[in-house]
Length: 81
Length: 468
Image (cartoon, rainbow over the protein chains, first blue to last red):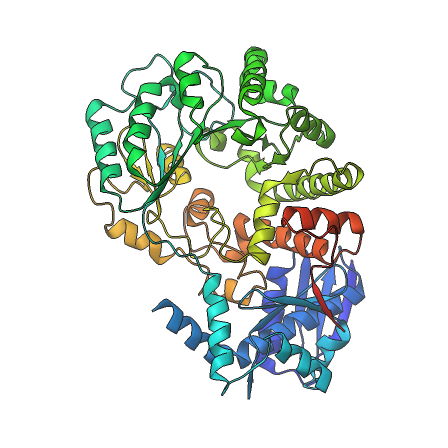
């Protein structure tokens, strides 16, 4: 079992929480544990470097979703009404 | 302020895939992801994102409109009913171990359309406002009733374009069947479970010789473009990959649509272990596609493809060009296509018919001759999109993916299962991961096959943008 510990480095609590939740669902065979300052990721299938990349992708995904929520919603609403 | 409609996912190759809501994509380096997370994008980064439409100034109304247009191109437009799946008989001369419907024995009475039912089907066809129609005859074994098929085909004479597909086990080939098959706008679809040994074990037993002879006869008479054969694969006991490919190419068939056993109908009772065969299927499918890539590169005289992978690939690169009803979003039910069963019952999909027949849930929408767009139809369609689900809205592959509520109902008896827990999601997440691994594979053999599957003129070319 590989373990990666990644510093949260100023990531917002809400984005980190969502990233931790969804990372475990989108990447099979991953366990994610969110702490106050860091996140711990474990997997039997991936190396530590790849786990770190997965975390950063999951965190960026949440940040992008949060920052673009309003225009996204408006566009979809206009298209589907 | 900028609007950045991207979603991100780490690829096994070490890059991070970025896909916009409109389905445009690039692979970014880990350094780029770190800069984006730290709000430290360089001028080059920002110029790259703006140039590719991934970052749009919120006051740029034209940019927003262009983005919205590209998002819209990804959405299914289902206007009018122009695709019918008709089941003139439920009777069949075979009893395959994973037949997807509760078939009836060939000698049983009451499992064919009645005269009254046929009249209602023909009236339904008369009412259609479309100028083109596609009709697929399913069963049972539809060729047991060539007279019913002829009646439907004749009634479709008024359309500007009409295409017919008969899904047949090719065991009944008399004068009436040949007369049907001779129609230039009629195509033959059959099952061939890999190699003939597997086919015999799973389907035809001692009659496999007859099936093989008939399959060869129709291909010889019409050429392979009129005939498609589909293998149903047991992921727990799959046939040898080269044997499957050799069997198909030996018949002149170059497209192979691999299908895992569908967890419905009789298959539900006889192959319950297929419910959780995801890993076995994924490994087999990947190995199969890689073998096709090797063989295409080695022998350029023909292009072999796995049909479903090609469909997914075209959904990435050719939005709106693909009308495969098992992978689209939204996936409207009983709008542009409709199933009429042997007893005149209407269903939104063929899988819904099987599900109803196996007693899991009644998804019938009424009787032919009646308006089917009632409360059940409205409820089904209310859930027929991946657009607002909390998992799908986070998923990088949402613009390319679809929604299959009938599959969810078949497996879980409810639509309330978290999307990432469903077999549909897991299968497609894994499949799109694989496709993007191929897209970013620099091996010329991989690029050669991808270019052929996308029908590009170039011999090989890179298909994915990179940003470091």
